[in-house]
Length: 289
Image 1 (tube, rainbow, N blue to C red):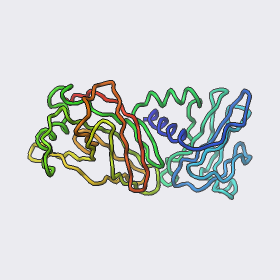
Image 2 (tube, rainbow, N blue to C red):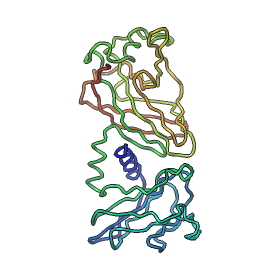
Image 3 (cartoon, helix red, strand yellow):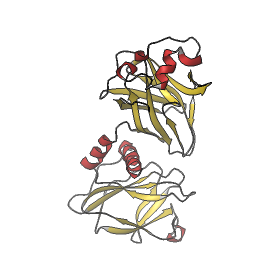
Image 4 (cartoon, rainbow, N blue to C red):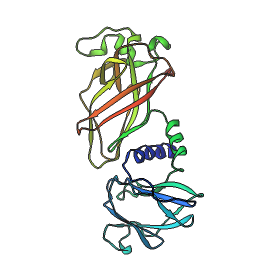
């Protein structure tokens, strides 16, 4: 879970604009990202001295050169004093050695989850970490993790994909059943998280490997899996919705070619707010127990 949180923040930080680093030489170099959606713009004090002023949500600073490896950090609403700090005691931040780091303010003040998260060394380590966590992406307040597409059913054991089974049976109650074979369809799954203070509504999906891509929900009625298209899916503020087998999923129909394990597909999510997230997700062979 901690690795997933780190990767989420890395993805979001890498998508934010920031000026080139002005610090040079050895030692610790730090930039700070404000990723706490309910926190106001803040001043940041390091060892009792103000180092950053009026840092707003989704902003990230330039790199700063610091002397030492351990620092007492206090976060104050912009324009306030140390007596107004958001935590009763300074937050101790420690770095393992010289290098470039990102410190992200994450979580919510209201529920006590606010913290300063020190990411691994920036540069190659961050990119390696991002690459290892396949099927991730972010846009605005939306972050997706764990996304994957199922290999087409003809490449899998029969009955391994409940969505394909429902599809082959005439769409399980959808209007105008397509009557496709199980090999003509696939589904994609993922966890969609919303770090913002307002809900986001998923209203469209698309894929580069299918001529028809829709947002679906699978339900079980009288012991039979039935699937139907849904027009939208709300991702609550500060919450998440999981697209998983037997529930919500991205349905890819009229595939242009079979999907084999180890391949990749491109999926685009469109939200009512105008956010659009395009990501590359791996194809996996998953056999249901």
